[in-house]
Image (tube, rainbow, N blue to C red; front, side, top):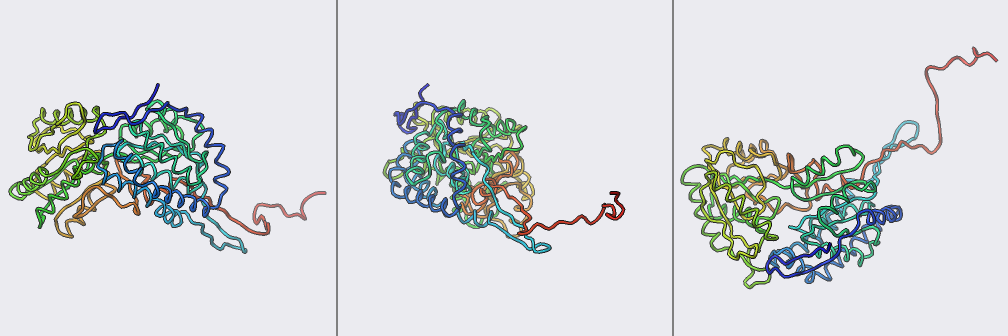
Length: 474
């Protein structure tokens, strides 16, 4: 069955291809593993540096493809290409820091050494919102450690996935070391279930992550790294600059049309005039946001969501909040019925009982008013997720308390919830991950430590438990 990729902004067909076979791709990666793993890490690092140069050489082409296939503005697609390039040096530095060889002296001239080995063949399942940057964040450290990779891009962004793999091969990464598996959910499940993989690295929804966790439950010998979504809180408290706080809130909620796992989903503010002033400042800024196609001039702030199914789902979630008693402050409009453009929306849910604890993966923000900072922290923690959280305003003492008490893997102060730095660990707790943070800590799940006790000459004695040799009978 032919897989077709459509441009979200226009509905035009961008790419088509036939699904691949997971077993075939895994076998090819398995065959290539010994030779790639045997190369010195310096060789693999230089090969990946050539990959970064290959991406630079085709930066404009790659950015345009990302913009067309995801619908994100061209300016944002360019930042994604930049992140792909930057990941190489960040990964090399992190690998050397976190998996370097250590040696210690032991008794009788022996030594204790700790070195790291690659797992083998790693499967990578990529998402559609950052179809180059996020899978690349798994693939580069996996290759650097000596693994080979089978990469299945999202069925919604296969063209970007295909070009990413082409760039690896153009740079000299052996074709067997990075394999491309085109397909949808069936191919993804087949890849995850292949006996020939030694682990799976996944970025995507919590629901899919839970399914993979169950699938791997009886396979503790295979590494599983899950980078999942969030129902992320943004608390604004005693902010000295209301305009700056409003800007941070808008950036947190609506950048990438809300299609970031770190996007703010819940805005928590104090009851009364301070909260009202923030909302009014946000609305003025929201009215200025340009929603448009990727190549429009002036450039839009945000484009469409990925497809009509996604737009339908977000609208259904928003309608559900309205039915439950949510008060619409700014509607979630769909200007073109046949295209997945959505306008930034804000809905107050303070008095909504039984609010769904789920990720609304689009430009819809829920407003919650509380009567104390203690209540703000309690509301921030009122979720099964734990990816990102941010406090805007407050005192240093309040941020210390916020940092100590809020459960999340990324906790910011006077910064948006999104846009985590690539040179730091990135991951969450609860339904947001399985304690395998990526970015700078990806080296930890791409190689495993091996401890060796070593001596150049064999020496051995048994000090206790032996009979006296003079007492033994002939």
